[in-house]
Length: 240
Image (cartoon, rainbow, N blue to C red; front, side, top):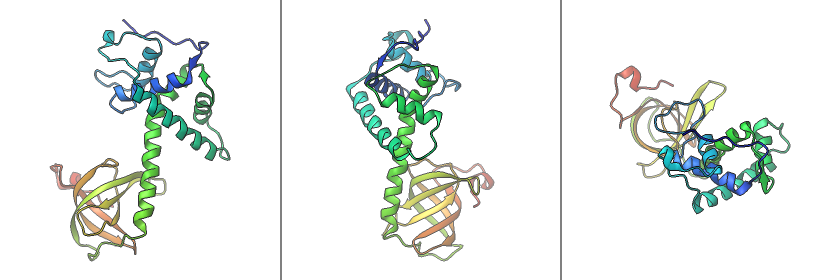
């Protein structure tokens, strides 16, 4: 049995469609599965939303299709957050994405065409990333007030336990820049290094070399995740 389609002329409760998007995000284990991704035994988020809004029986798809109270609560927080984001972005050039998000969250009822469903499906993951980025910036700003560079000479090899605060693509260098804070020293220290192989919010046991230092921060290179067995020095190290 396949999934039904949604009529673009049908009107839905905005609270319900946002909660359905969060339910799909939860069912897919806090992942945004796109329509063109081939993930074994998982449905794209947009398709789960369609099933939920059509009140289809999840047993036909081995899914527990249910919009929970927690989904509604998370959707409400997401809606409030996007309101704030839109207000801050009013002076910026609008995009099809921001226009669709505005249409969805700005009224009590909404109709959904195909493109709107895809954008709706992405909103929880975008919300999570925006929140994490905002939290990491706040944490970094607070740490910067007291953090000093590592008390090791440039070129020294160090073993550190770090918590990753953010991973951002540098448009200047076209590489990912990871910002982290040390966890195994007397005081926390801010460190930066190239490479996007880690995950935001997670803690890692690494070895590295001191590349450069400023008053409040340290730059690392030859960073290696010690919790992962290297396949060879070339693959294990990240040269900055």
